[in-house]
View 1 (cartoon, chains in turn green, brown):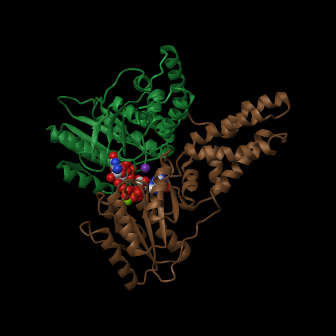
View 2: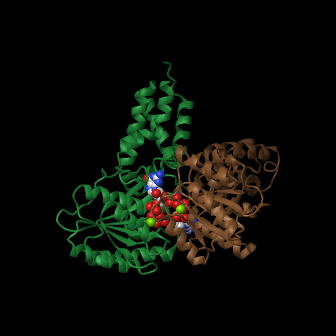
View 3: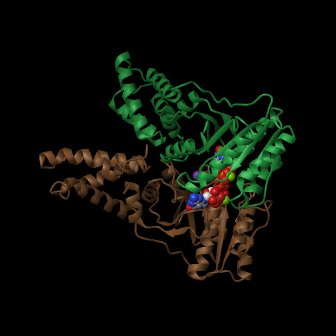
Length: 288
Length: 298
Ligand SMILES: Nc1nc2c(ncn2[C@@H]2O[C@H](COP(=O)(O)OP(=O)(O)OP(=O)(O)O)[C@@H](O)[C@H]2O)c(=O)[nH]1
Ligand SMILES: Nc1nc2c(ncn2[C@@H]2O[C@H](COP(=O)(O)OP(=O)(O)OP(=O)(O)O)[C@@H](O)[C@H]2O)c(=O)[nH]1
Ligand SMILES: [K+]
Ligand SMILES: [Mg+2]
Ligand SMILES: [Mg+2]
């Protein structure tokens, strides 16, 4: 096979591939500059060598700061509360269903809190998931105060000695101040009831989202101290590359990825596999 | 972190030009680099950006900018004009069938806003056009999708046609149209399940509904926050179904919404409406010029 040279064209193509993956211009430029230096320094001319250099660089960007894996802060002998936040339609409720299934399979006693009292059919949707997975759902009627739902859900989880409480919230755009205040209140109620809770605040991001995801991460982090990201809809053609920029600028790690609409379409995030998927096309093309 | 608008981006270059008092071809090139960046940060697809820059550069180098005393302003003006043109005129009218009922299909990726927009559109048809639409729950897959549409129907006091989730969407559409004829509904709005454009089986389902229902309009509902992938999605839905228009949702957020330009350029189909909130009256006509300003951060 004839391999292409590692020249300006190569880097230009790499730049385009990463931009098309929504990595974001600044992060891409940073990366390409560093790569060029590396290639020069190590005198690399073989694209397969560049492949590993790209891989290393991207994973390095991804893991800058402390190394975090997809670890979830589970309390071994008391209730673990996980709060889900994010903009509209990204996959919060579905992810809760999937995660409930995963923990249930691990033998854990799981309860769901129907904290989206706003969107039409949101409570029913969570209930369908509860039935599917076989876990209880704590709910109030549509239009009621979500903070009150959380309060009740915690009492109920305690009474049933549950291991894990997964809290759904209504989707909200980060520029809506009132809705973000409401979310803060929801979190405060949880904090007040259980010191140290919520043990994780997971921001759900849709992989098809572009640069706005950075603003989402920033604002939701400010309001709820997000501890991790769930990147959904990776079964489509979008790559969700903005998580690299989010990691780079805000240091929030991805913990899970969503790969479909079914119960078991949730996986722990694997940075190396993910990063390889971002630029694999350029490498595969060379190997042709 | 918040992205700069084009005007801010051009500041440096303009300062430099001011010092020289004359605009050279390389100055224009430099300004175009800033335009490129601004568009990429707004999520316009990079291929679309490339073509766009080529077009604008020609105009800029030609005269308007180089001969201008205010080259920065001129660049912005040219860019905005070209953007606005590309996005077409205002197109908020909805087709009417000669043989009622007029059928409209709502299609798109998961979570884009189809069900909500179905409710909003029904509301608009009644309020603005004095129509009497029938809402059709043809999403049998998403948990509680039918309940969601029924709730919206209740809020609007409008009938929702459903056969539960054990009957195929094609059959639901067929019976809904019968029902609409019998009850003298002049519009039928079919809410379909979200699906990936690469899901052959589910895309076929849409083709079958289209064949059966002969819709006057097929609206692709797209989330305004969509990034580079918007072109793949729009191109693919359009190729497989022949969409008639686009609804851009969640524009009440702070996204620049460059996807609008991407979709318009790859499909040639008009953006008809924008979603401006979760409530049922939050659907507005699309204004190309406003969208152009927004994409440029102005
Ligand atoms: N293809 C795909 N679809 C997904 C995935 N996760 C969720 N979805 C779909 O995306 C749509 C929205 O999911 P929801 O779970 O309702 O999203 P949400 O964030 O709770 O939405 P709101 O509560 O309305 O803000 C549904 O049709 C889900 O089935 C995923 O990983 N892949
Ligand atoms: N802020 C805002 N939210 C919107 C808008 N349109 C829809 N939404 C919200 O986006 C979320 C998803 O909307 P749906 O109508 O359920 O989307 P869908 O395309 O029917 O989703 P699936 O059926 O799961 O594919 C809900 O939380 C809606 O309230 C809008 O214009 N602005
Ligand atoms: K979305
Ligand atoms: Mg939800
Ligand atoms: Mg829907």
